[in-house]
Amino acid sequence: MGVQKKTRKFAQVKRIIGQRDARLKKNQDKGETEGKRKAKGDEKVREMYHHPSNPSPSPSPIRQTPFPPSLLIDPPLSPQVSSSLFFQYNTALVPPYSILVDTNFLSHTIQNHLDLLPAMMDCLYAKCTPVITSCVMAELEKLGPKYRLALRIARDERWDRLKCDHKGVYADDCLVDRVMKHKVYIIATNDRDLKRRVRKIPGVPIMSVARGKYVIERLPDAPEK
Image (cartoon, rainbow, N blue to C red):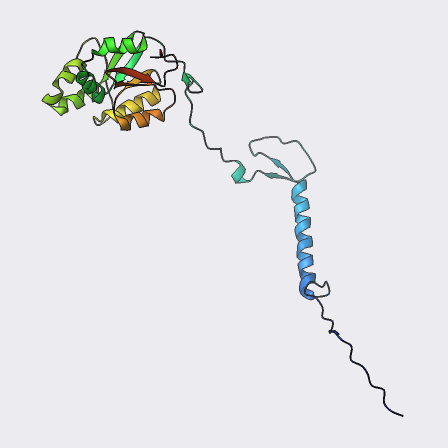
């Protein structure tokens, strides 16, 4: 009697235990650590935080722990906005207007043959008071005889004087610092750099010389021309 031949089964593969099989030892250890971690998380949820400044927390059987130090840090303070501002509108600017005059503005006034005070009043249709700081006076004195007419105009006794208590005689920094602290002034200048710096400060109008007259920008109540 002949031996029966065994036909080979196609696509037959040996069975191997998967890497995520629960019977492996490493997977068993991993499951134990995850179980402990979940148990700790449940305990943290049951804890009730109280601030250490509270002298008498309410008695409770729940375990109490203080706030972590990161929660006790004060939030960063935002820059304080002037109380005279209503959005971009400065309610502190009312006639008579106080106008801080720059060195550059005086030289353009002379070049265009303008009278300082009447031209300001023609621009704003209101009473104006030019204000000369000690920094502007010092700059005009340093510029020499070329600016002698501007210095003569600045020395007029009708204008208000402001004494500066800082070091140096750079007028641009002085004017910007003054309008940031007190938003009751109009800046009169033709300097491009100073204009760019003042435009970043909300509620401060700028007066300049253009087309043979004074023009004003960023003043909502200014008359249209």
